[in-house]
Amino acid sequence: MAATKEEIITGLAEIVNEIAGIPTEDVKEEKSFTDDLDVDSLSMVEVVVAAEERFNVKIPDDDVKNLQTVGDAAKYVLDHQG
Picture 1 (tube, rainbow, N blue to C red):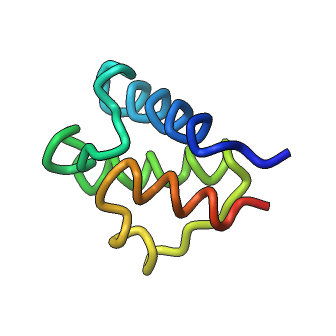
Picture 2 (cartoon, rainbow, N blue to C red; picture 1 turned 180 degrees about the horizontal axis):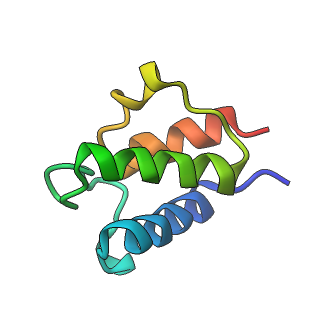
């Protein structure tokens, strides 16, 4: 069953918490991974891999650069989940 946008954002918050140690309540839709959440490029790769596994999506490397905010990532997953 496909996840809702809220479920995806919650899942992304849990992933960012596990990888970068950012409290889940600080991971909001409008937050930038790099500017607001201090997710560096290496950690972003980990976030993407974890999101692919959790939400059963494939995020090509060319698309990762477009995922600037948590909302961008949530919309991508919402649009591409299997």
